Image (cartoon, rainbow, N blue to C red; front, side, top):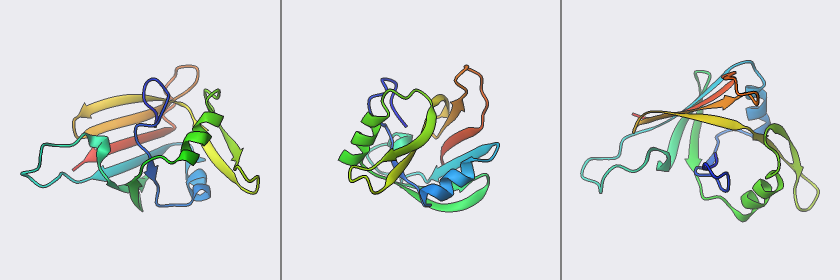
Amino acid sequence: MQNRAGTSPFVTLELPLHTSHFAALVRGETNRIVFTCTHEPEGGSGRRPLLSAPVWAMLCNGRKMGFAVRRVGSHEDASLLEMIRSVSTGAGLLPDKEGVGEHKYLRGQFVRTVGSSDCEAYHLADPSGCFGQELSLFFLRT
């Protein structure tokens, strides 16, 4: 997901499933992806921002998928984001630098809803401005 300026992601997660499996999951009508993390032990230096958690349990439409891991974006990630900079919405394939593979992408406008410091949701908005709610991402700290 990207920050408001749209220049760089503010969270990059390595999902616990192959890209083609994820693409097959989101082809359905409505998708709810929930990422949960746990509170840090008491006595720490204060609570970290919600999206800074290093590990997330992932559920897709109520089904346990495994664990997503926060990671630092790579140079290749930055190059791919630069390639789709002019795309406002859509999905497709990008070739890799060697021309032997490809990368799938989904680009859209997400509307953020903050429930509390322990709960945020991101809903994919239809380009016309309507809330189709076909893809929603929930981040919860339990």
